[in-house]
Image 1: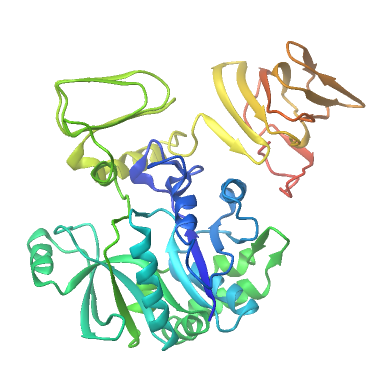
Image 2: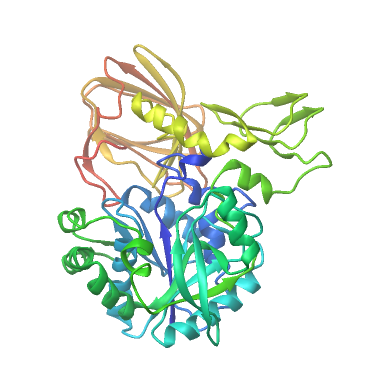
Length: 475
């Protein structure tokens, strides 16, 4: 019986703002080491046998970022399902189940969020094998995390009768108050609800049809009329948007009578806040976790991340400071769960700092804005070897390009020519143009835009190497 990993890669991770943004969310960040949380989730599956290539479910907007991160760790055969819209976990897993059954009717799904931390992967793999054994007996299996504290931010699972490889589930319970959580931990019968699952794909689809028929129908219709190429699976947008949104817990697990639990004690954290990340980070003699250009004086129990400039803390205790190129967060450690409220405020004010970093990633490379005025905008642009921007024109702005490093192949109307370091060119308003990197190293240019409308919406696209819509407004 083949194990089919399913990695749920949606979500915005708003409680980890300002590092996590809508267009570059938590699961794509390297928070613990040089690998992203998504990459570490996939790498810890090594040693699980028999295990097939993963299915990744992610947002349409993150498709090229996810593909690039998979390539970095030599996972080239993953199937990537692109959700037109986030619908929570029950529909997402439904799409993955249909995909798995199409290749192997007996596939057992190992469903994992992409943004969790597990510090003892061997224990995780051992628990996963127990869960697979239970799934062979038609159980829907969840992993219960052995609680180390009376956490009020998690839902709990109460175990029932003992099974050969785990327990029957007696009940799922909502996030408790502190006194109730303390009683849960003292009883030894309650586990944190991990959001990780194992079951046969066909059994999940049957359960979805029984307990959430509208979701079942919506997912089935969206999958049946999907578009698919060698890189991505695109469920039908209209059908999927008509599908109700719900979590797999509410839609299936809390209703089904064949649910089992496998205890997991493997150094797990969902890294749901800066405080929880501090708890699992390496600390200095004064209990501080520091990364970047940071100077501390008489500071204790604090979490500091500096990405672009020097950050100093003097005479403080239990503080979170996160510095990025365009935003700084300062919070009391015990209030770090409230960061989401800041993100909500930014959204209500129609600001951009919760959506994008100053450096914006594209399938061809990245750009970042370094200066802006009423009629000018300066960008630093990096194009990966062999990649190219879309063929496009602008109605309201001209552009000046100066090559800083590498070779630029420029198309401007009916001319194509190469520029090297310290050479420049001018793209007039309305000129049909494209930038390409024909070299073996990254191409870097400085772009100065001038004109009356410098928004990204002033792009008319005519051709694109990455399958993006011609009328899209992103270069």
